Image (cartoon, rainbow, N blue to C red; front, side, top):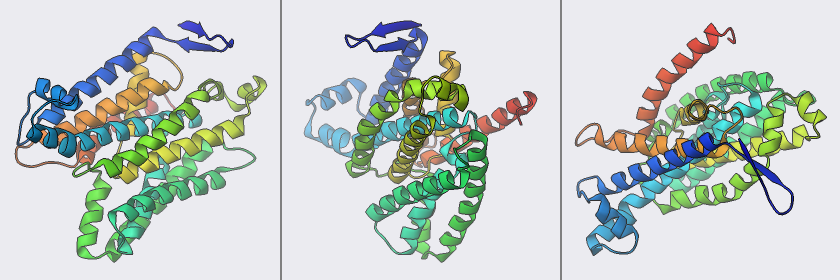
Amino acid sequence: MRALRSAGGRSVLLRPRAVAVGAACALLALVVGVLALGSGDYPIAPADVLRTLTGGGSPAEDFIVNQLRLPRVVTALLVGAALALAGALFQSLVRNPLGSPDILGFTQGAATGALLVVVAGGSSLALAGGAVAGGLLTGVLIYALAWRGGVHGHRLVLVGIGTAAILTGVNGYLLTRAQLMDAARAVLWLTGSLDGRGWQDAWPLLAATVVLVPVVLGCGRALRMIEMGDEAAGGLGIRVEPVRLTLLASAVLLASLAAAAAGPVSFVALIAPQLTRRLTRAPGPNLLPSMCTGAALLVTADWAAQRLFAGHQLPVGVVTGVLGGGYLVRLLATERRAARL
């Protein structure tokens, strides 16, 4: 571990292995992104993709790469990074590897907001707004229900799991109230899909990422202290509840905007932070490396979803669900052997 000091006396701790893992995952995400841009009914060589991205290429290549395929790849990278960051924050705040927007009910809340819009016959833009509103309202509800002079991690997990179960039932009922075509559109959205995503889906998430990531990183030291326990963090001068509320609000907003862009893509928020922790072999939330891992995971899963079966594309949520479900079973078995369940 190395400490870098700024001219103002502030210090930043760097772990060389964590930096290497983050850089490797970011490079993998970019390489897979270039391959995805060149794959499809009109294949383009990676060198031609790079030339087109930098302003060269024929008009046909410019249209296919920059107008048709690039928005989907950028959305995949942003959604993966946002979900991974949200998962890393939740798992650190609740000090539980099961802490994830999928399991704590925030994703189901976003789905409820989106389904209410579908039942009301709203547009795709309104659906995205409903997802964000549903996720945020669910976050406020869970925080209020878990509050007992402060928010304890285990209580937040239990309240979140209960809320997720209730909202899952509500979502099933809302699907029965929708028109047939709207219900089919909603089921595809609930699976998690990047098909047909454009710049209008990427820009809100990009703006939120640019604003929220510096806020989260600025709370990184306080988050590491909170991982040691509220009393220990308070003894070290950390204002625990304001920091926790700031980070929870950031995580809920990131998860909600990711759901608005691509639907509730499952398990990326659960897997990416833990895979990063194993690769870096470093304690703590590993925020930036987790973002790079999440981006690499989702863009790779989406590329595989498009290419696994010739002539038929799977929603990316199917791929992450299959992989994540197996990982969740392994995680539960590990936690049980360690007597933590």
